[in-house]
Image (cartoon, rainbow, N blue to C red; front, side):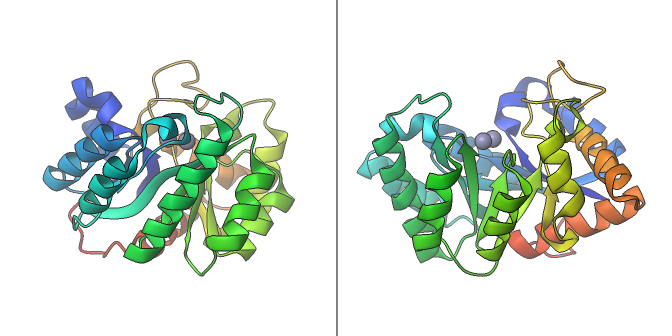
Amino acid sequence: MLTDSHAHLDMLEEDLDGVLRRAREAGVRRIITIGVDLESSSRAVRMAERLGGVFAAVGFHPHDAADADKEQLAALSELALHPRVVAWGEIGLDFYRRLSPPDRQEEVFRAQLERAGDLGLPVVIHDRDAHDEVLSILRRMGTGPGRGVIHCFSGDLDLAMAFIDLGYYISIPGTVTFPNAARVRETAKNIPLERLLVETDAPFLAPVPMRGKRNEPAYVKWTALEIARLRGIPLDEVARLSTENAARLFGLNSDDPS
Ligand SMILES: [Zn+2]
Ligand SMILES: [Zn+2]
C-alpha cells in the first residue's frame, strides 16, 4: 500500500475515474489532494468528502500570495475545520518564479503558519529557491514534532536534516528518478526512513519512465521503487514506512476508507 502525500486531483478532474482506478491498481490507497488558493482548496475538500482514501489540504500557494487578502484567509480557516482536511498547504516561498512579490509571499506564509498552528494542523511547505528564508521562518515559528512536511524536496542532505531537526518530514518527488538528480538521490538515500514521504505533485513532474507525460498518483510507485533501489531495501518496506509516516503526520486512521 502506497500513499501519495501530494497531488492536485482538482487539476485531473476530467479523467478522475481513470486516475483513481489506476492509482488503486498500483496500490496507491491514500492521496492527499492539495489546494493552492481558495477555489482549488474548496474543490479539494469536496473531493475528499466523496472519495474514499482521499484527504484534503487547504492553503494559498506562494504563487497566489498576492491574492490572499484577509477575507480569503478567513474563508480558508473556515474550510480548514472540515473533518476531511488533514493539513494546511501548500504554503511557502517560491523565489524561482516570483509570481507574487517576495515580501508579500513571506507575509502570507507567516499568516498561514500562524493559522495552521492555531488549528493544530500540520503544514505542507513549498520551498523553491528559498531554502534559507524558509528554514529561518520555520525556525522562528514553525517548530514542533510532526509540524509538517517539506514537499517536493529540492535541497541537499544538510538542509533536509535541518528541517528534520525542526520536526518536519521530507517528501521525495519523482525528480529522484531523473538522471541529473544527484542531490535528491543523496537525500532519499540517507534521511531517516521514519521521516520520509513520497509524492507525485501530479499533474506535474512525472517520474522516469513516465517523464514528460501528465503525472498522476499511480506513478508514485516509480518514485518508491527508486528509493528502494537506492537504499537496498524491498519496495514493500518503502511503501509501508512512508504510508505509516503519512498516517502519523496527517492523523489518518488505519480504518479510513480506501
Ligand atoms: Zn509545490
Ligand atoms: Zn503542489
